[in-house]
Image (cartoon, rainbow, N blue to C red; front, side, top):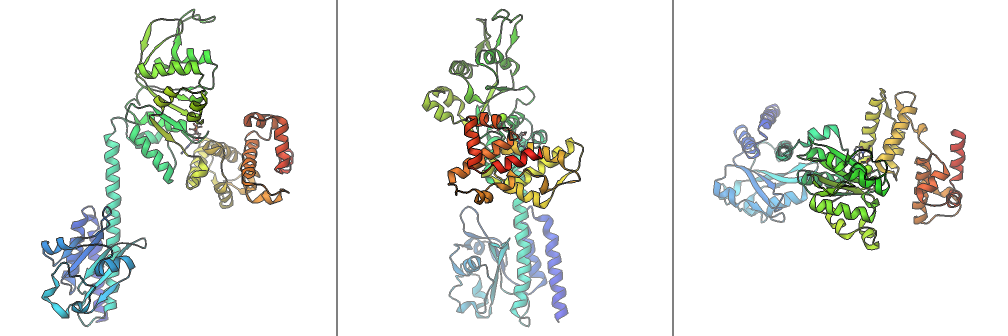
Length: 512
Ligand SMILES: Nc1ncnc2c1ncn2[C@@H]1O[C@H](COP(=O)(O)OP(=O)(O)O)[C@@H](O)[C@H]1O
Ligand SMILES: [Mg+2]
């Protein structure tokens, strides 16, 4: 007897597992599962009720032994009846005699045939411990088998159903994504990202990636905002590759790298004799970008006269080379990036308002790394792998080192990480980056502040971290650090003492 139950159970589970190939057609697969239960066991009626994501209602998705009309009536609120109860409590529920159970709503009105003798049992369908629906049957085994046997088998079946539902959802999401990729007139996202890959599964980076996918195929100007080193240039590069212009040039200009007059001739070109030294005519970078994309990095550094010229170019796509009156036209898409607050620049009068609005049609904020710490481990692994490969090494990160690197705030963002990993890969002796290789400031931040005599305020804590990171970036060269931070040498040495960084400075000097 016991043995026969086991055999029947195993058979049912086995048959159910075979339906997995049908998971793409979920309703059909669920019907098949219920049919298996009915043909192998004593079950006459069963329903699979799943929560509808949009409405939150519990809706019968598959049934056995119910007419179409009965099936259609089977929609429950989550606070309604036994189905709702099982769903809310995530507990199995047995009704020995339906006619005496007020909770049983009999919405489907099919139970009146068998009346009092019918028992009714239900188990929650749980996915990762959370209810997504309810599986009901009137019974599984005959009267001679105790209920807990029924419940046990039913729970196994419910678990299998949960995985069908999950698999089905994953396939549908993947399909939707593929459809989106294919609808790009240019290259598919996966193709483009194989060259320029963006690591980041954190919610805020998913927003960024979603915005990128939306705006890439359009001609709209995109303004990339975010701190230095967060990945703005990378985003611009990927936007170009995802666009219809990917076969044409991606031209990058750093607006901070050249003085005003040189920048203008670089952008728009010049004619022979336009200025001393202009011995022959030269096309501007905007001409080079014709049909493609021009990326204006550090746009916040542009002087007001050049801002006007750029505005005209953005509006009319027209320009003149320096020393020429002939108006030229090009077809370029403009992407821009800045780590400045342009709106503040507008308020202060250093940035033209009309240019700001022109550029700000589609802003994308790339968040600093400290605001998406979830991404740190993946980024670390990405860089270790990439840089190891470049150096022909095979290096990994030890667990303790990983722990320190994951906690760090990365004020210089992804760029700081990439640079540090490069140094660590070079320095690693064996096949592992050990915690002993890490610069001391990494583990000093935060918990070491007790060693400073005066307790620091939160603002001072932040300042201390910034100063420390800047010192490290500049290899503890105080002059360079002061320049980077825009303070005097005296101010930096005062801060080094005030924040108790002089011990670290000593250590660095001894080590270097
Ligand atoms: N999400 C990311 N995944 C992989 N590499 C990244 C990511 N973000 C930035 N990087 C890399 O970090 C470095 C700095 O990024 P970059 O785009 O130059 O920053 P920004 O332009 O904002 O200063 C680049 O080498 C870039 O390729
Ligand atoms: Mg950049």
